[in-house]
Image (cartoon, one colour):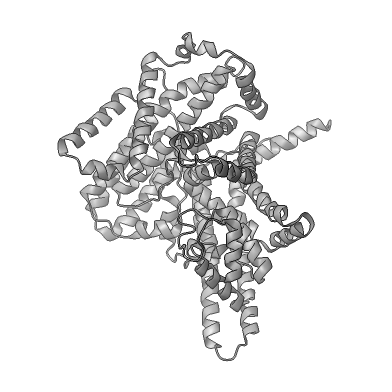
Length: 534
Length: 76
C-alpha cells in the first residue's frame, strides 16, 4: 500500500474530513454514489495500477450473480406455470438440474477470483517450494519468480465478495442488480486496510440507505477513532521498536528475551489489530454506517475455542460458514464418517471427519494470513491445539466433578492466563523469520536461564526508555480497565451519561495522550497495520 | 423427536433440550457439536442437512431442528 493513505497519515485525515463534509451536504440519495467515488479515489491514491484487480472481482461477481439470480427467476416461473402438471419427482429433477447450472457459474466465479488471489499472493511461494525440491533432487533447473505486487486489501475484499456470491447461490438473498451498488459493497474503503470481512446482508442494509447527520454518530464515531489511534500510536507502534529488536536477532535474544518478545508481540498485535478495527468501525459510524464488531475482548477467553470465537470474528465465521460446514456436511465426508464409525467404533469414528475438516480449515486460515510456512504451521498448530482440547474433554469433566472450582475467580484467572500464554506461544510463528528459528526461540525459553538479565537494565537496551515502559504499562492498565468496564455494556454509552465536564476532560486527556505520547518522530516508524499484509 | 433429544443429550447431558431455545446464541452447541449432530442425523434420519441450513434459527432449539429435519425429509 502506498504510504500516502495510511490510516495514520495526514492525507488520510484530510481525505476523511473532506468526505465527511461533502457527505452530509449533498442530497442524501447521492450519498452512496459519493461513497463509491471516495472508495475508488482511496484505492487509486493507494496504488493506481491495482484498480484493475478490484474491478475484475466486482464485474465477474456481478456477472455470475446475475446469471445465478436469473436461473432462480427462471425456476420460479417454470414451477409456478407448471404447478399442477409436474410430479414431485419431476420437480426435484428440475430443481437439481437448475442447481447444477447455478453451480457452474458459482464455480467459475470462485475459480476466477480465488485464482487471482492465488497467483498474486501464492505463486512466488509455490515457485520457491518447487525450486527447493528441484535443488533437493539435484536438478540445476530453477523457476524464476514473478514480479507481482499485492493489491491493497485483496484478501479481505476477495473473501467478502466470494461470501456474497456463495450466499446468492445458496438462495440466502437475491443478487444485487445494480453493479455500482455491488462495487460499493466490494470496495468500502475503511475495510480495505485490514477488514473486517463483512456480509452482504449486514453491510448492504446500512451502506445504501440515506444517512441523516447525527451528533451522536459523530461524537461516538470520533471517540472510537481516537481510541483506535491510542491503541495504534501510543501502544502498538511504541512496543514495535522492542519487538523488532528482539525478533530480528534471535541468536542474541534468547531465553528470557524470547519470552519477553513473545509477550510484547501478543500485546502489539492486539493493540495494532483491534486499534485498526476501532478506527475502521469509527469512520463507518461517523458516516452513519454500522459495521459488525470484529472482537469481543478475546484475551478474556477461557479456552482456545472461545478465543477464536472472539478474535477476528468476521474471519472465523467466514471460514466456518463457507469452508468448515460445507466440507463437514459434504456427502463423501458423511459417508467417510459412517465408514469410520463402522471400523473404528462410534466414539472415535464420529470425531475423525470433524478433525479432518478442522485441520483443512486451519491450514487454509494459516495460508490466508500469508504465503509462508510460518503461517501454515501456525494455522495447523491452532487446529491441533483445538483437537487436543476436544480430546481432553473427558479429563476436564472428571476434573470438574472432583474439584468444585469452575466458578472460582482463581480458576477463571488461571484459564484466562493459560489461553493468553498459549495464543502468544502460537503467535511466535508469525513474527520469527522461519519455522526452525521459531522452534529454537521457543525452546530457548526453557533451556537458556538468563532470566536474571531482565532485572539488570537489559530491557532498556531494546530501543525503549524507562518512560516508554511507563507509557506501555499505563496503556496496558487502561486496556484492561476498559475491557472490564465493557463486560457490562458499551463504555461510550456509560460515558455519555456522565457530566459534561468529566466527559470533556476525558476526551482532551485522550487527545493529548495521543499527540504527546503517540509513537512518531525520531526513532519510531509510522508503520502499516500488521493485518494489512495478510 | 424423542430420538433427536436422545442424540442431543448424548452430546450435552446437562442441558434441558426440551425447553432451551438458545442453544446457539448461548454457545451451548459449538461448531464441533453441530457437525457431530448432522452426521448423527444423517445416520439416524437419512437426511442430509446442507451447509446453508446451518443457521442459528435452525439450531437454537430441538424443536427448530426437528422441524428442519421434517422439512428436509419431506423435500427428499
